[in-house]
Length: 386
Image (cartoon, rainbow, N blue to C red; front, side):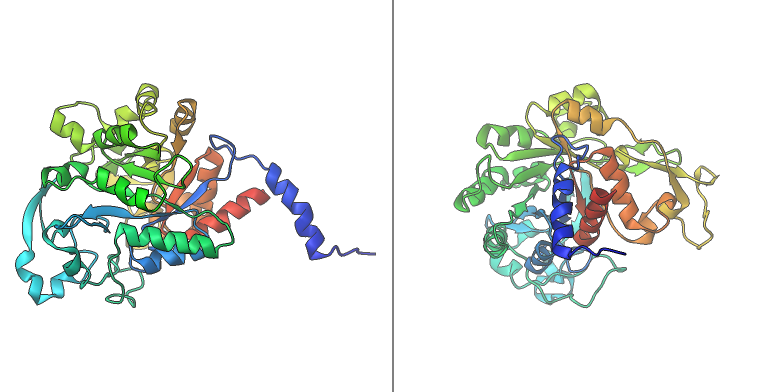
């Protein structure tokens, strides 16, 4: 005779097992799901609507990238440039604002947030920057301020039955902003302080690709800090390549510091980072990279014959020791960025984005930045069931 156990009892029995499951993270706790620019796989990035959707999907943290307006307000945009993520280029009243500025040593022509007041920014509307993603919501959502984001997070936390919802702001191009007379760091702390979130216990990480601003922040706050680690491209053999401005923190380039991002990931480099930061946010190929399946003329060939050359034409190589080295230095590891599109998945994953998360969970990452919070949470649940 088959005995069917009530669902309530099954859940009760499963809970202790889940509690006992050990992750390979720094402290054994479940890896964080960090909503990269909000639920950016579904809605225009860096909008209150995208952040809310990510929270409703169960994100542990939402990630607002912060830039400064002409009149000193922090707003959420991926870059100081507005052209790719707003409707500014279709607004005749702002046509004359298009200009060229140096951003991390690169001459860039666009519309810059620092040439707009907050009132003007509020007349713009966000758009989906990736053509392969849903364009139906273009022109519907405003650009939020950092203060508005924190207010929304506090409201959502109150509605979530006590579930902690964190914020993970990035200070974008600190040297660029400082040269404009619009330094970001103290302004970020002011807004956090007003929200009651400038303390060690607050669910807050501040991240940056530069170093000196994080070192400055460490003298001013006990909020957790994360050093981002960038790269330029991945060679045919899986080696991460370096080229300006993605070879080193831009403040290193300005000061003449010869160290690169790769140098920062050596055991010594990680110990140096641990002097001022709580974790690293490396580009994920530094942890698990991929090589071309077929190489023609020193480039990947179209191995799967789909008429396109992308990640699906590559296969994974053995993981690096970055996670274990970082943990040995006491650092958290939060790689970026996980996405669902087939063209972004190495052939080993056979088109299943969940499998990529599982591979990185096995490696022991402490969290990950994702455009698709729902997929990340599904993978985390499956990992517990293994």
